[in-house]
Length: 332
Ligand SMILES: Nc1ncnc2c1ncn2[C@@H]1O[C@H](COP(=O)(O)OP(=O)(O)OP(=O)(O)O)[C@@H](O)[C@H]1O
Ligand SMILES: [Mg+2]
Image 1 (cartoon, rainbow, N blue to C red):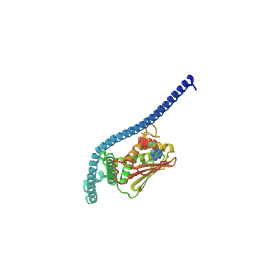
Image 2 (image 1 turned 180 degrees about the vertical axis):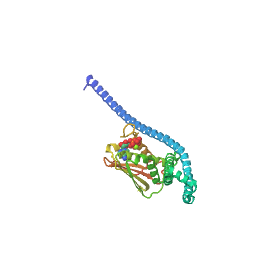
Image 3 (image 1 turned 30 degrees about the vertical axis):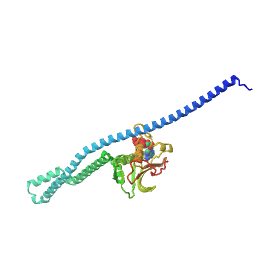
Image 4 (image 1 turned 180 degrees about the horizontal axis):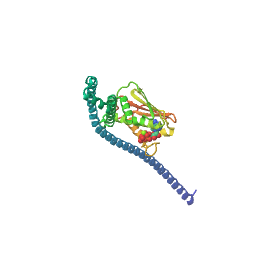
């Protein structure tokens, strides 16, 4: 009859207890690790949402500010243009009066007023004024029309009521967005267009403006020493659904693979502190996703970058964001 020694029994008990403790520890460590991962994910989602909220709020207040300023400018520009048109008519009347007197001066040669009139004309350099006045008025009218155009654009781009989806002409949205940032583009970019015939697209015009404006500014910043921006549009079919594609292609500094992986992250920026929020692309991504479209990027460091925005032509179904029918992306 074999008898286990009490030492061996104690040892076995202790071993079992240790194994159990180790198993428990393993289990706890695994749970802790999982909790950590969930926490990290939640934190990231929170940061994303926070970033998008900040940007959305910033854009709303900027939009309201711009709409207010545009509205204030609109009235004085309106009456200045109207007054200028009346003034042009008045000046024409005065000019024809002067022409009539000039035509009849030989007949009035002996009249004392004739000498006086000619002297006054000479003193006031009326011949020069006659030549200069029409182009001066035309230029001023042209300048005011441009201000009026810019204001109309600003009002359209920043109009908060535009949050209703509407049938939009994408080319018009592109042109309006270019006009808004033209001051930033004109010194560094040669802008080329290659537009296809496109149907209208149901989208939030002001949101698409936001996306385009950020892309154009990014292109300008990537081409600081001068470069080319090509905006190409086309119609494409993906999984039986019609999309319009907008290629925004610059030949600027491009990005490394590591950078291009992070560009849609909120707050990611390679710009100097205070220069960029790093929210432009993350908000653009969210807007396009909301429209059930997609943004893809292809970049070659030192050669340039092409962003492609896909937007479905048919009104997106509000309940199914980012569905399987969205185009497949190449990210590189
Ligand atoms: N066309 C481009 N060429 C090269 N790099 C780009 C281009 N577009 C975006 N990037 C990179 O992606 C980063 C993020 O862009 P995003 O628009 O989100 O923010 P940002 O431009 O830095 O800041 P903000 O939009 O507030 O001015 C940029 O800092 C830049 O490094
Ligand atoms: Mg940007």
